[in-house]
Each structure stands twice: as structure tokens, then as C-alpha cells.
Amino acid sequence: MTKAATEYDEALRIMRGSAPDRQRAFALLLAASSNGDHRASSAIATWYYHGQYVRKNFRKAVQFAKKAALNGSAKDLHYLGISYERGEGVKKDECRAFAFYSSAALLGDKQAMYEVARLLFYGIGTASNRSLAKLWYGKSGIARHNR
Image 1 (spheres, rainbow, N blue to C red):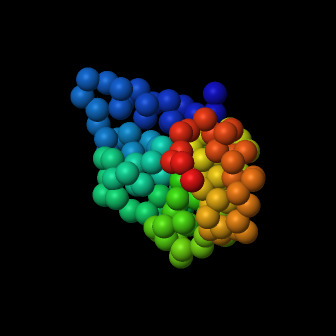
Image 2 (image 1 turned 45 degrees about the horizontal axis):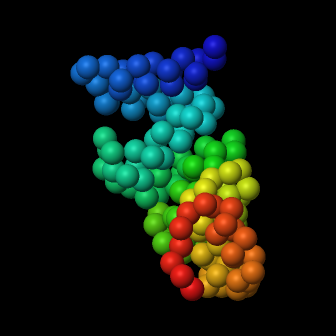
Image 3 (image 1 turned 180 degrees about the vertical axis):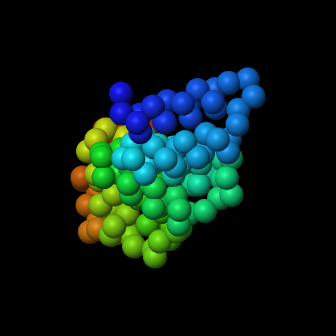
């Protein structure tokens, strides 16, 4: 087991305990992320994105989500799509949002599939293509409003 994996596993153990030490867990996650564990980068991104255990900080969330996304994390690619679509932590860029959602969708993220369909339907960040949007809506399995 690598040092990064050990740090990540220890952070999980601490957070699952009866009296979690969030500061210690966070320090371990930072160390694991620095040592290349994309799961730790993803966890930190989630903490910052939702303001869970740390003060909400979209810039830091994006920074760590990008590290995790480089390793094919569909969840973090989806977060990046949201960030670029809303302009949270980055300059708003609907084309990049579409690209990140598409990458997450191709990795099987159902909500990202829905977002790809929505953007295609309305022509946000890409040309409108309602036929293709309907296919993505169907693939997502998420109910949509009648159009």
C-alpha cells in the first residue's frame, strides 16, 4: 500500500470513528492528495464545494476537483461542469461546462447525462440538438419536464 493510500485510509478511519477529528483527517487528506491519491483530492473538493467541515470555497473545490478529474473521476468532472456553468470558482464558460458534463456522462454519471441533454436541448454551450438531447435524456433515466 502506498503512503498516499495509507493516509487516505487513515483519514476515513478517523472520520468514521465515534469522535471524528476533522482537522487531523483533513491534514491526512491534504497529504494524500499531495502524494497523488485522487480519492483524497476528490474528498477535499467535496468538502470545499459543499462547505462540509471547512468553509465553502469554490476556487479550492475546483482546484482539487481538477486533480481528481485527471484520474477519470466522473463525480469531479460533473462538479467541474457545474462550476463552469455557474461561474463558481472559475470564470463562467458554458462550452467548458458542456465538455466536462460530456466527459462525466461518457464515464456513466447519470446526472451528467441529464445535464448534457439539458444543454443540448436549450443550446447552452453547444449547438441545440433536440434529437440528441432526447437520446441523452433517455440514457440518463431521470424524468424530465414535458417539452
